[in-house]
Image 1 (cartoon, helix red, strand yellow):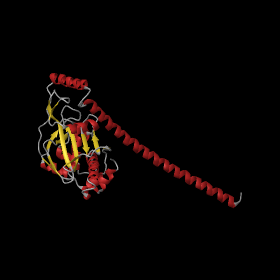
Image 2: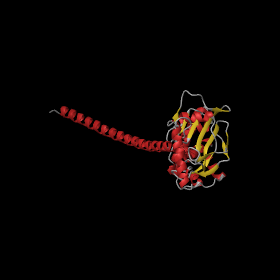
Image 3: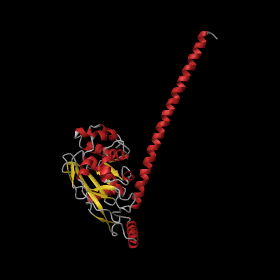
Image 4: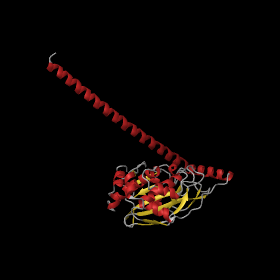
Length: 318
């Protein structure tokens, strides 16, 4: 074999080895992406399973399937006749915690991005939900509800970027439900002012036991027919339900309440300011997604919020 032939053969072998190496690297990258995707799918499946369980267990039937409601009520009556119910701890006010939640640093939001929160669901082809000429954010939940307890932190943090809330009471979810005594707040009788967005909270049920209701807890606020229709259309029958201008909805919870177990309200607020904490990745990520949805309805206003890195990152996840 001549020198030229040998050099050509060596060159061909080198090229083949190079292609093989590149193929191996590409395969490793593909395997890494697949593993990350499987991890995300596993988390999503766990959240979906929790939401389905809550829906089955706390279904609110507002028409039709009356026998289901009667069965739920009968079961609750039986339980309450045989056992004295535990009562939630009394509500309190805490201006420092309220202010802390409403003023999470932009740097923290930017570092978290979408975090570990679940995506929102988009709605199209429906009239926009507005109030006084502004996009409306409708929250529907119950004070007893642990999933509502988790979601309220994200809603409050997001709304704090567009306006000012006051009159918030700090409470815990039911001590006898799943994720018992989850620290949270109540929007009942609170107020909110903003030139960008309107906030309408409906705390449908309180924390006082009442065997005469479908959930076993006393009514606090009754939804209007329009609010009930939105709930029936998009909620899947469970709490919490958040409708953002009738363009995006939160059905269920964006993260699990277990993240807040055994924490005080002040500890939750402090953890929300630490972008490395699991609490911040859950709550601030969810708040960034809600913020991004609101920004689409306010046409990018205020710019300092809507053009921030965290909101832009979260916008890709709604």
